[in-house]
Image 1 (cartoon, one colour):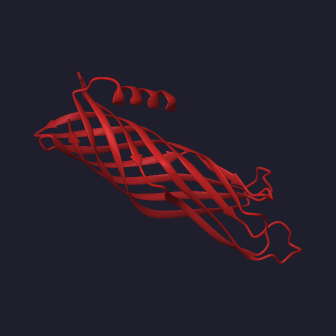
Image 2 (cartoon, helix red, strand yellow):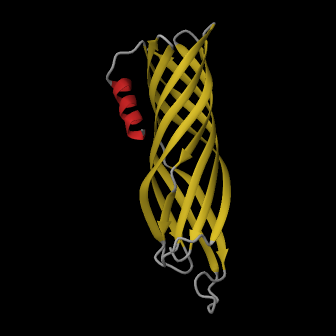
Image 3 (cartoon, helix red, strand yellow):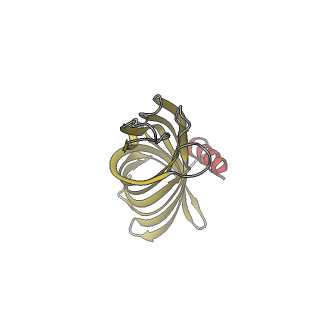
Length: 220
């Protein structure tokens, strides 16, 4: 489903003729909720769990194609966050992790830096009159994530992997004669990402975001 949505969005956005082509900027206020679990021996059992919440602000650029259908307009788009950002960070104090006979102490930490964050999406819309319309959003999200783990009981480790997810949203759009404004509430459910330290401690993060998006665009 994810691959199909991505291919369909790219084809329609960049190759097919449309009633309107849109380009613009989106400003986002997001709440990032992460459930982090540690499996100290990588044996499948969870040893520690921690919930983390962060509020972040960022900007992105988007390109869209809109077509008219018998049910209303349909927009295919791609959104890019052009800068690398720290998506999540965690630290915890450790007295002894794997061997209770030792007195190793210090701080474990980890952070995830995200780059090339792309969202491919479809937005069906219903015209309300007077330039107003309501729309829904179905999107597939993909990004590169570099996770750095620092542990007092193992060597530091950096893991590069892909971060994928599904975005759902609803919003309202106002046409301003060649320009438009969109206000949208959305949620993104990312797939779990995990990394294992050199002493076989597996750290897994389940990331979900709630976003308020304000978009300003121009039609061509």
